[in-house]
Every structure is written in C-alpha cells, then in structure tokens.
Length: 84
Image (cartoon, rainbow, N blue to C red; front, top):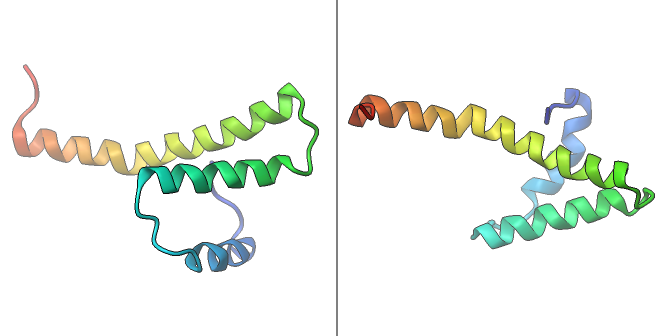
C-alpha cells in the first residue's frame, strides 16, 4: 500500500510539489522509472530486490485503480447503463 506515516510524508510531498507539470504518460513513466532506479541504487541487484521494486509500483497501481478507475467505471455504468 502506498501509505506511510504522516510525519514522513512532507519530505516527499515537498519534492513532488516542486516538480514541473507532468504533461504526458511518457513523462510520468520516466519519473517513476527514475524513482525505481534511485530506490535500487542502494540495494543489491538480486531477484528479490528487483521484484520488490516492481511490486511496489504494481501495488500503487492497484490502489490507484481501486480508488479512482473503478469508481469512474461504476459512474459510467450508472450514466450509460450496464452491458447486457
């Protein structure tokens, strides 16, 4: 889950807020890849740590989908009707 204690969030929030606008999917993917590479910089490049890095991003993706994309899909069903 992408949740950490509130007292640790500000250090990351300040950095993220200082970024320029993220204009495209490519920009977002670049930033995420750079963060993953930064995380791995201090770790051994073993299967378990590489796997941990990928799954951290996947878990964030799952949570984002659960909170936002699924909600939007539910709204579209209400608005347009379900598929019969």
